[in-house]
Amino acid sequence: MSGGAADVLIAGAGPVGLTAAVELRRRGVSCRIVDRLPARLPYAKAVGVQPRTLELWDRTGLVADALDVAVPLRGQLVYVDGEEREPVRMALPPEVPYGFAALPQYETERILEAFLARFGTGIERGTELVSFTQDGDGVTVLLTGPDGGEELRTRYLVGCDGAHSTVRKGLGLAFGGGAFPEEYMLADVEVGWDLRYGYAVRAVHHDADGRIDDLLVCVPLPGPGRYRMSMPVPPELSTAAAPAEGDAVAHGLEGSRAPALSDVQAVLDRMAPRPVTASAMRWSSVFRISHRIVDRYSDGRVFVAGDAAHIHPPTGAQGMNTGIQDAWNLAWKLALAVGGRAHPGLLASYDAERRPVGEEVVGRTVRHARRTLGAADEETDALLREAQLLVGYRGSPVVLGPAPGAADGAGPGPGDRAPDCGGLAGEIPAYPLRLHDLLRDREHVLLVYTDGAWDAYVPGLAALTGGSPAGRLTAYAVLTEGGTAPAGATPLPVYRDARGEFALRYGVREPTAFVVRPDGYLGARLCPPTAEGLAGYLAKVFS
Image (cartoon, rainbow, N blue to C red; front, side, top):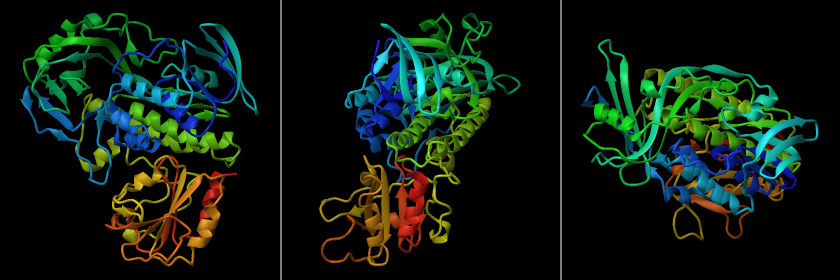
C-alpha cells in the first residue's frame, strides 16, 4: 500500500486527529491520517461540545454544519432520592457567542471528515501504525493496512491514537495515574417522557449512610426522545475481573457482553423521574474510567494529543474538547515549522502550554467524579471553566510579557482567550459585525485600538504587517466611539467600536494593540502600540 509522502502523519481519526488534519490542510500542509478501524464507529461516546470548541469551529468555517444537527444543552434536571431539586441552568454571559451543545461523536467525526475532504484528504481506514523511529530530519514509520505494509518517511508524527496509544508507547512516555473501581453502562435509547427539551437528567440515590448507591445520567441527543444514558453496571455484566488490555490502561468501552435493553429498563424503573419505557436502542456497552497524563506531550518530532496524552472521567464533557484544543494548538505551530517560518522554540511551546491544561482537567474531573459522576455546577466561574473559556497560557514562552495598559486591571492579557464583542461598524457592511467575524479564517490578527491619532504608531505597525511574516498577519484598526479616522485612504481597514463593547471587553482607555493568535488567544498586548513591541512578539513565534 502507498499513500505517498507527507509532511505530517497523524495516527488516529477520531475528533482530535481529524482536527489536526483539518487545521494542517487549511494551512496548505500535506498530511496523511490513518486509523486502524475499517469504518467510523456508530457510538455516541463523547457527546458534549463546549462553547470554546464551537468558537474554534467558527474560526475554521465549519460551525454551521455542527449547529445544524446539535442539540442545545440548556441545563440539567436534578433528582435526589426521588425528589426534584432546583435545576442547574447552564447560562453563560451574553458576550459569549455560543452555548453548550450535545452532538454524538459519530456526528462530530462525520462533520470533520467531510470538511477535511474539501482539501482532498481522506482517512486511510484499516491502516495501523506499527512502529516508528526518528532522527534530526524526520520520522520513519511502518504502517500496515489492507494492501500490506508500507515504510513511510515524514517530517512529523502526531499520535491521536487514544488511551492505548502506539505512539505514546513508542516514545516511552510515562502515563501516570490510576483507575476508578466503578464500572458503568452506556446506552443510546429513546424514551417517551415529557421532560424539558435541551436538559440533561441526573438522578442519584443514597443509602442509609448517605453514600450514593445508584445513579442515572441522561444527555439528550439529536432525535425525538433520544438520550445517551449512563448508569452503574449490574454484577452479571461486570468486567472488573477481566484483565485490562495491553498496557493495563482500563479506560473506555470494554467487555464482550453489551447490556441489553432490559438492563437499561431496570435502572429506569428504579431511577427515572417519570415512569418510562426505553426503546430503539442503537448501541450499548460497559465502560471503565481511568485518570492518567503523560510526563511530556512531545519528544523531538513526535507529539501526542487527546486521549493519547491524558484520560480522565467524563465529568463536564472535558475529554474530547480538551483534545480538540490540543490539536488546534499544535497544528498552527506545525504548519509554521513545516513552512520554515517557525522560531526554533515554537514547537516546544506545545508541551509548555497544553500539559498544564491537561493536568488541571485531569485533577478537576477526578475531584468531581469522586463526588458523583455527571455532577454540574451553575456558578458563573465554574460554568466558564467547564465551557473551557478560562483556559489560558499566561507565562507561556511564546506570549509577550505582562499586560500593561488595562483599565483598573480589566481586560485580557497575553495568553488569555480573545473575547468576542459586537457593534463593530465598518464603512461597507450595512450591519454591525462581531469581532470573531474579523478573526474567522485568519492566522495572526493585529487589532489596533485607536482614537484616530494615527501618525504616532499606525504607519509603523502597518508597514511591519504589510508582507510579513509571509502574509500570515492581518491587521485592523478599531476606532473609539468618538474617534475620527483621517480623510481618504487609511493604512488599515477601520471598524468603529460603535457600542463601546470592544473597549469594555478588552479593558482599554488609550491606544493599544492586541495580537490574536491563530488559536484565538492573545499573543501580545501592546500599550503603547509600537512597531518595536510588535516585532518583539513576532520574533518569539516566527523565524
